[in-house]
Structures are given as C-alpha cells and as structure tokens.
Image (cartoon, rainbow, N blue to C red; front, side, top):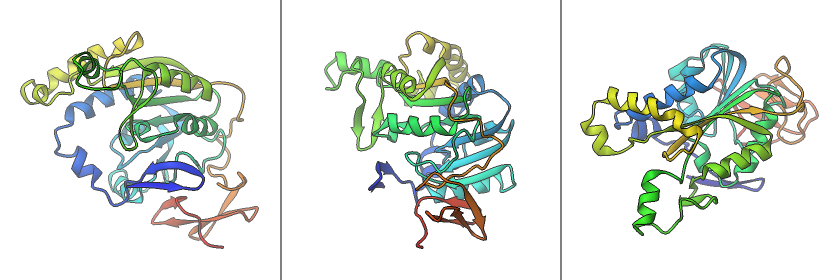
Length: 302
C-alpha cells in the first residue's frame, strides 16, 4: 500500500502483507538469497558495536549481523517486525523499531554500521533517505547498500531491440511501477557522495536471475558463478542488483555509540521511557512501545 504523509514523500507500507511467504519462502528465490548473503559477508565488517538494519522486513538477512553487540531492526511495517521477532528472538541484543527512513528516530552518530538491501528501490527521494542514514552513523561507519540497477544486460538488450522505451544508459531513475525504481550506478554514486559517503567497493549480483536458468542449472553452480562474477561490479556492473560498501565521511555528527539510541522526531531532543511509551523530555511528542516494538509510525495524542 502507498502512503503519503505531510512531512515526507509517499512511501510503501507492507503492513498486513504476506511478503515473507508470497515473495521469499517457497517462491524459488534461493539463488538470490544465497548470493546476497555472500555479498553482505564480503562487504560488512564482521564485528561492531551497534548496527541498524534499515528496511529489515521479516529479518531474512538480519541473522548475518550476529557479530554486532546491538542490532537495531527497523522497518515501516509492524507486521514484518513481528515476524522478525519470531525469527530472531526478543533478547536485549535486538531493538525493534517501526519508523519511516525519511524520518529516522535514531540519535545522530548512534550507530557504527548500517545495512539496507531491497529497500531503496521504493524511494522517490533517494538524497533525502541518504541524508537521514548519514546522520545516524558515526564518522567512518560502514554502510552496505543494495540497489536495483537500470543498466543491466536484460534492459540493455531490450532497449537495443526497441522493446522498452526508457534508456538504461540515462542516469535518471526510472519508475517502472508506482514507487518501484531502477537506478543507474552513476546516479547512486553521486547521491552517496553528496550525502557524505565515499564508496570503497561495488559488487554485481544476480546475473543469472532468469527462471529458465534457475530451473535447469544446479543451484550450487549458479551461486558459485555469481560469486565469481561479483567483483566485476567494481568496474562496470551490468547486473540487476548492485551491492556497495560505503563509509561515512567527516567529523559530524559526533560519535555517540555510548549515548541514547533515540531522538525526538519533532525537536531532535532526548527521549526517555515511561512504561509502555517513549516520551520527549522537551514535551514535543510521545510514541508507543507495543509488544517490544518502538512504534514511531504515528505519535500518540497528547
């Protein structure tokens, strides 16, 4: 479902969806799942203090972050977060947060790593999302980003055969379905740079994302070939999916790993917990804590 708020662009809300069972489990995407895990392991440092998994969904990839002391599992859908709780558990290492990435309730510099895969393709305002992500990261923190690339072999062939109108070599994003975008690698590199990141590595994934191949070629062989080809992304990725390793630059915001995790969405001030609510110390807002989920989707009435 598409949802618009006065303070942010339209967003996709997976509330009540069957994303886990309708798209992943039993849906023939073992190849994508395994190759994405390989890419994440190659790019993300294995250990750290506090990592935020942005758009974590039902926690499919969150288990790969087990080397971090504290894992913030963030998604806009409460439904998916409850599934993530079932999958990952509810011990103190995990903090579950329902929030909009355009308006992150995480304190500046409060995380020393971030991961976001299969999410940015729903964003009409990529620079605004990257600005929010940069703010919550300490200087030098890694940010692993996956995006859907418009400059892939299938799109190039279809364009040359005049079976699609949009140009895969044009750097502007293409919206092929409402709030579903493909991005040119140069566009994403520019947005990351302008938001305060530098990109160190880039991997190309899913060259073999074709139903016929997945049905006829052994899964282990497809995964091995994909793994072998992933480093080609450093030069000129022509794959449907691209993973990048980026690092936060600069001296601001200050390193705050030991400080509070949350900030007020209205004034940016500190929050404190009061029973089953989290309250702005300046009196600028209150939000619910429901079944272990910090719910910043809507503020509570005063």
